[in-house]
Structures are given as C-alpha cells and as structure tokens.
Amino acid sequence: MKGPLFRLFRDDHRRLDALLGRATAAPGHVDLAAFADFRAGILRHIGMEEKVLIPAARRARGGEALPIAAKLRVDHGAIAALLVPTPTPAIVEDLRSLLGPHNRREEEDGGLYETCDDAVGEAEAERLVVALRRFPEVPLNAYNDGPLALARAQETLALARKQWER
Image 1 (cartoon, rainbow, N blue to C red):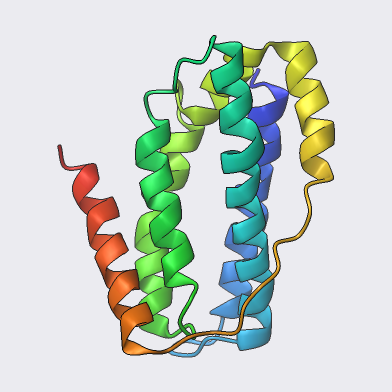
Image 2 (spheres, rainbow, N blue to C red; image 1 turned 180 degrees about the vertical axis):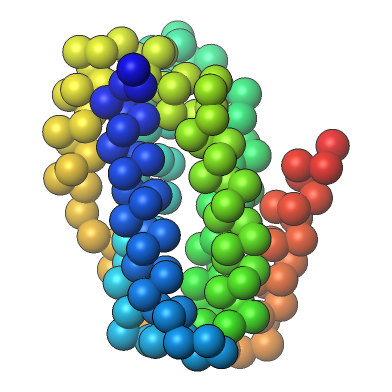
C-alpha cells in the first residue's frame, strides 16, 4: 500500500495528464483555454514538490538531500521553461517526452514519493497532505514567444534529457 503523499501526487499526475489530453484532443491543434488549466495545474504541482514535499523530506532526513532531488529540479526547470512560449503541438510533444519519464521516476518503487512517505512517516505525511491541498494557485504570466524564451526552453529541455544519460 502506497502512502498518502504518493497517492496525492500520483492522482495529481493523472489529473494533469487528462488536462493535457483535453488540450490536445484535436490532432495538430492546442486548445489554449484547456492548456491554460494544465499550465496552472503543473506549475502548482511543481511548487508543491519544490516548496513543501522535498524540503519536508530533507528535514526528516536530518538535512540530508534526497539523491534524486537535484535531477528532478532540473526537470522542473525544463517543464516550466516549456510553459513560457505559446504552446504548439511541437512544444506539447517536448513536454510529454519529459513528463512521462519524469513522472515514472517520481512514482516508481523507491522514487520520490515513496521516499518522501518513508522519510516523514505516516502521521507527518497525512499532515502534509492537508497542507498540500491548500497550496495556492501559481500566478501565470502571459506567454512569451521571444527568441530568448524559445531558446531557453530548448536549452533546459536538452539539459534535462542529458542528465539522465549518465
């Protein structure tokens, strides 16, 4: 039986996958209104992991960093960078190519969520779930299609992919 943190984040992955699917239901087209729901949700999800989950596990481990946390942070940066330009089918494919392996690494046996549940213990995990459910929405900026934003998105995507090759 997986712990409460695992279940919360796994279920959120499923919700986000469904939102992205809705945004891309028409082949070759991205529904911007539906994508906005995905964008807001994934940025909130990343914030929950970076600001609450990972720090709580680190504290529970006496300040010892989670071995996978740095790599996941690089992935999170790439995901966020891909959300800066207006979404296109190509950008969505890049997002999916990153999200699939990223989510598996978080959900697999010994992955981020199981490690966090184990580190904090069941009572603290339940308390964190309550706090995480109240985590605020992330304010969204307008899309930026400038050359620097597009270059940064591709740069961070390449870095995220490369880090897992080692």
